[in-house]
Image 1 (cartoon, helix red, strand yellow):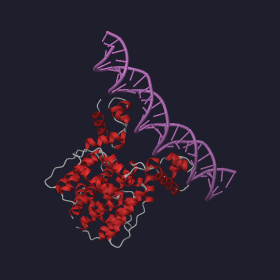
Image 2: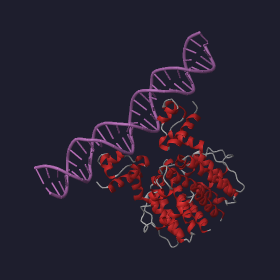
Image 3: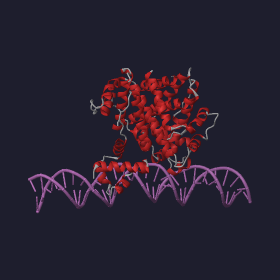
Image 4: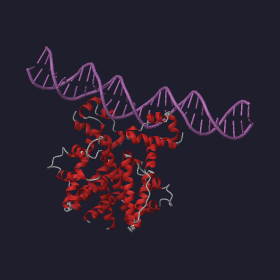
Amino acid sequence: MERSDIVGAAVELLDTAGESGLTFRVLSARLKTGPGAIYWHVANKSELLVAATDAVLTVEAGGDTPEETIRAIALAVFDAIDAHPWVGAQLPRAPSQPAVLRVFELIGRQVQALGVADAEQFDAASALLNYILGVGRQNAANAQAVTPGTTRADFFESAWGHLDPAEYPFLRHVTKQLMTHDDRAQFLAGVNLILKGIKG
Amino acid sequence: MERSDIVGAAVELLDTAGESGLTFRVLSARLKTGPGAIYWHVANKSELLVAATDAVLTVEAGGDTPEETIRAIALAVFDAIDAHPWVGAQLPRAPSQPAVLRVFELIGRQVQALGVADAEQFDAASALLNYILGVGRQNAANAQAVTPGTTRADFFESAWGHLDPAEYPFLRHVTKQLMTHDDRAQFLAGVNLILKGIKG
DNA sequence: TCCCAGTGTGGAACGGCGTTCCAGACATGT
DNA sequence: ACATGTCTGGAACGCCGTTCCACACTGGGA
């Protein structure tokens, strides 16, 4: 058995059964072996999650302009989390894992290419990265909270419906917009907002 | 025994022993009771964490201008996470928990006060919120990863030191700035970046 | 050819977790 | 005095990550 077999089976389990579905016991069963065999190739569960994330999040930079490229990177991360919600929870858990560093590096280079001053490059790249990871985490949490078949209206109703309009005027005010909007488009709008701030 | 006693003891445990230090067993021991008594007042651990977060994150809006108020809100969240790192991990876990909704509402109102167009209010407030939660999560993860006594240089060395400079030019490039910078100031710089984007 | 070190396996077992269950203590209203 | 509903605390359940260890298998030196 190879390490890649283990990681592959782990990804499969995470995709089908969610974060809590990945267990060394069911992983053993699926691989028709015992926990000991798995621990020979993988140090612990945390390392397995990092490896699974690394295998799933493959982002590359491609675009005509730095700005366009940043949008493409951000959307690639968004789409990966959309396809594998557990990644959204995993990414911010260990900020130094290779998958995050790769994204950070890619964004940073494009920020440099935008002509941002040296002293502000880290702030700019970090703002973008944190926003991307933040939304991803949020989307993953929502995806987990929603039982299949729930409509968008149902979701907001259950989350915000009980709020007192007098106490939460803003949230009630924007609810109507949320009913029809697209998560991906809104995510992109946020990226553009930050890009606008970066470009000054 | 009151529910507030349980939440208070939980906060104390989380502060002193971290996220993994909160256990119904040690919580029972500290309260000199059994798990059953706790479950009479609290449905499960998740609810306990939400209650603990709610008790710790008390943010209020105060400032001369909307922009100034947003900065104050953001810093209040940042400081709360700095004082209680476990909050950083808890906040994005359940986006609909009251503590998050309160912050969202406060930010949203200030965004409205800034004169942002109706259709963009949610995007703007959401970008700010996601950035704040993202950085908080990141800081919390870092705080947990760092053993007391580690210097800033040690931390970056262990996280990024092994990176190939040819493959990660940007990260290596910004490392020197990170050695001397202040997390709080950098967080604020990110908020200002987004504010600049919002104001157009 | 025999052996033996090294690589890899799989099942049993350990301690700890969140949670459930239940017998009973206690206060309260009749 | 007693019945009722509230609240307690300890035992037990099932599951988890992880460790341990006896055992197959394999390839190269004597």
